[in-house]
Image 1 (cartoon, rainbow, N blue to C red):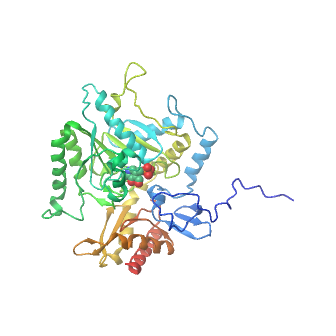
Image 2 (cartoon, rainbow, N blue to C red; image 1 turned 60 degrees about the vertical axis):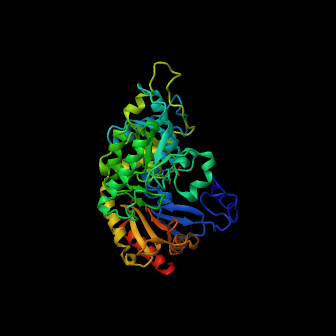
Image 3 (cartoon, protein in one colour; image 1 turned 45 degrees about the vertical axis):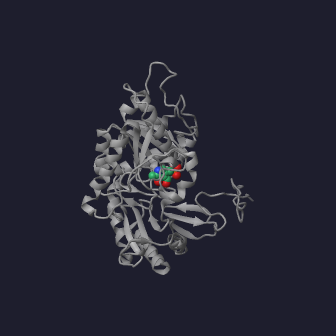
Length: 452
Ligand code: PLP
């Protein structure tokens, strides 16, 4: 009789163990959720419970899990080479991916620097901007500072934490980071006294302009998420703000770094959020959805004038003094090419807004709820802000943990979501069906109605 092949990995060992220290997770209270399989938009836990992946595995899984095309691309690459360095050499797939990224990103973005996660792509952008000002034909070595928006979130490495403006995440680390020039929070929900929605864009952009006037001589770059500040709680900028900032950066000779780690790859209803306002940043950061969320990879994409400042006749000078062991990894590159193909060979991007409106209308039952202050975001980036008082927009006491409780209830009801404070976040995979989205809306409404 034939014996069954020995499983590659004995999966029984994790049971009951608590060796894994997880990020942004209070380990003393955490009831482990262990996933053993996933398919499409659905996750299966080790006890067999099925959960809808309502935040696309932290906003990155755009085409669903186990997509045959991405799986096949990774397997095919595995039969060729799993990893080589990109310091001084490169894999064929990594070359192909760089050209694909240049093809799909806005305007004349032309050169791609690879890393492994969104934070590192921002880190590379910061160093790239500083080194650029040092090395360009007309060097400006005093330009070593950055302007970041209020409540900014650009990752967890020290450079990206320096840009961060979320007290809870960032304040503790002040002693080990630099201090940026802090811009406004271009929020459309809570407007400053006397500012009407129509005047909001100019109001916030004028505030940035006065900071640029004051600091442009020492500013290397303005760093911002275009359109929506995701981790800030889906803070949605007034229309036109991004293009005003682009013009101001040109006027005051400051680079514009757009962090599209969260907004990129279809989330806002266009391939990139910058496309909405026809803006080409000088440097663009990509991560999360780049590989469809299958393998760790990020990219920092620069325009020719930035790249050219790093070229020299001798091999030892002017090169970018930065490089990651796993940057440009061939398996991740193969996944990313397959993921980009899925965008370019179908009408996925064109279909996103219609799906997003369906998701929005499935939230109609909570539109007038006394503790739902705002339902916001762009397209498939949705935030539902829970407030104590809808009229005054007064927040709940953070210790009440209503966001967390709503998400726990939704998980019990079969939809895995994670809050940002009292903002309930919905970022489903872009391939979610109409029925999936109606179900997500129904569960979220039920969870809010029961908990708040
Ligand atoms: N930038 C933005 C806008 C993000 O939302 C995130 C992560 O959520 C990052 C950077 C950091 O990416 P990573 O977690 O891959 O380091």
